[in-house]
Length: 392
Image (cartoon, rainbow, N blue to C red; front, side):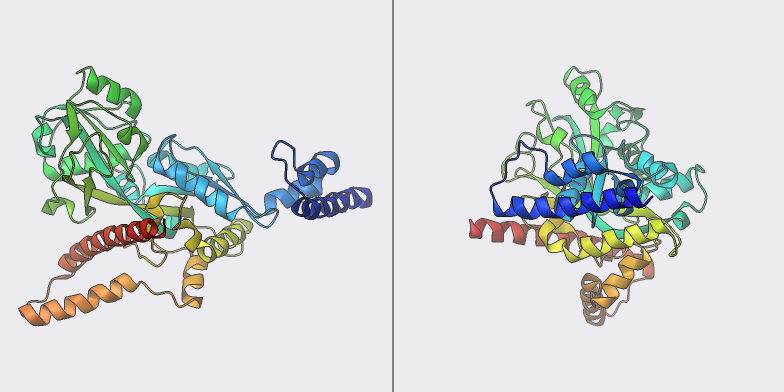
């Protein structure tokens, strides 16, 4: 046992020593790092334990989606040797990620859509599922993209038509079916992987493809066919309880939107969620390490070259009916970071109510606040883009 521990200590010392000498000299990216060589040569049970102690596994999303890019960004910024490693895994979408967080061994957290848990409960697939989850932070808003012939001008015109809503383990079908239900629409729904669905759209085999994801979404931005465009999804009252208003522009999708034109649509928040681990567990400790590093280094994510959707993220944003991961709440409280948007909105409500003489109901307040959040996120993103352009 002492020999094993001694070898492990040698490996660690070699790792630190070689890392220091590598910093002093020139780095050859074609070589295996000396720290990894030490692990391969002297690795032991103790090495295995050390490597696993601070590795956090994140289930992301499908190839080409925004979740995957966010997972890669998190790993890029937060990986810090043995202190913390973020291991992103390619997932299959929001519904599958919910199951993976709950049941897949070794998965610590993942990215899911805020409407997914509600859908699973509403359809009777799960009971009290939100109690099994906590959220680290609300991430960005994912826009609904409806691609159809230019003869179609808004979503309601697709009633009775054949619409692809991606595969039934993702999140797009959840949002699409919820919207159809709320609007009283009864299209013919087919479950086809997005890239294949877009080819079937070109061939005239289906009438529309719905994609829900953070703009610019890769499979949508690379789709080019002059017969098709992005269709308007009006922010109707039945949608206002769960969704946010959003816009898509020619800057987002020059192949599908004309210059100076914008397309109104809806959006649903993406959530960085975790299993509701008890505070005295090892898994809770690992997540706490992740939260501390993520929140501390958060400003780095809002700068190039990371995904532009990071500019929409506010760590203090609250999610109704969700419970915050206690370590995340503790960090925000200690750093006195309050949900500023809510404070500004409440002040706005007071002023508008005194001017109009009418106080909105609680439901009306929540609907207005969600609209306010979407508007503010859009304004912040545009301001940061302008600032970046000025710097260059």
